[in-house]
Image 1 (cartoon, rainbow, N blue to C red):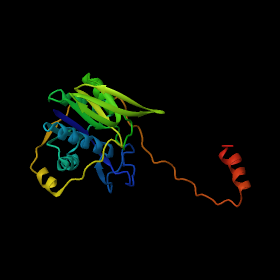
Image 2 (image 1 turned 45 degrees about the vertical axis):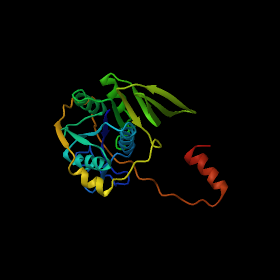
Image 3 (image 1 turned 180 degrees about the vertical axis):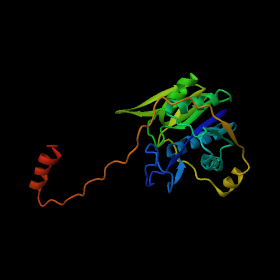
Image 4 (image 1 turned 180 degrees about the horizontal axis):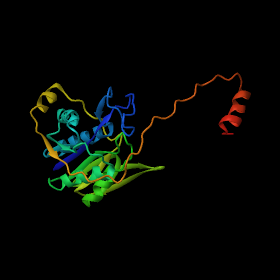
Amino acid sequence: MNIIVCIKRVPATDSKIKVGADGRSIDPAGVDFVLNPYDEFAVEQALKTKEQLGAGQVTVVSLGSADAQKELRSCLAMGADAAVLLDDGGKPRDAHATASAVAAWLRTVPHDVVFCGKQAVDHDDSQFAGRLAALLGVPSVTEVVALELSDGTFRAERDIEGAREVVRCGTPCVISTQKGLNEPRSATLKGIMAAKKKPLETVAADVPAPGVEVVSLELPPERKEGRILGSVDELIAALRTEAKVL
């Protein structure tokens, strides 16, 4: 089975973000970039699927700049077989442009299943998996919390409001992963050393013009200092007259 995992390089969620000089992007200075946390579940599920089958190929792919090689190497150290960097040339892109560029590359390589995280923690739009599947014309199951493979068919479970939904789908397909699906493994020293010898290919990406443009970016206003109230009566009065929630 040929398994593809789409990953993204994102700012760590504990980084202190500053707006860049252009007013439309973040200032990367001092920001720690990491593998998108939800993509870790995707990588782990790809490796588990290959291990279950006893054969196959796991390829991780990322659309971005050369800086993303670090995250790709991390996935190789976890156990992926090969990595591909789709160089976007620094072009601006939205969810549709991203999915279009990745879909264009996927059409050139054999694949049975594409795993990805349910969302990236930088933009949080949760659009990539659905758009990618639509462009490829294959089924999509999103935010999967349990997954089984039997006779070439996936049985997936996903949480919905007040219940858990169970669906089945064949291959090829696109599956996005949610927290709770598995416990991502850590890279071993042996895996880190082996990753240095595994192939990491760079391919020029065909990125279409984005349909959505970021006009401005600004930090939220600072919260006002809290104050200590002397009694329950003061609290109720404040909730009524200031917060207006009563």
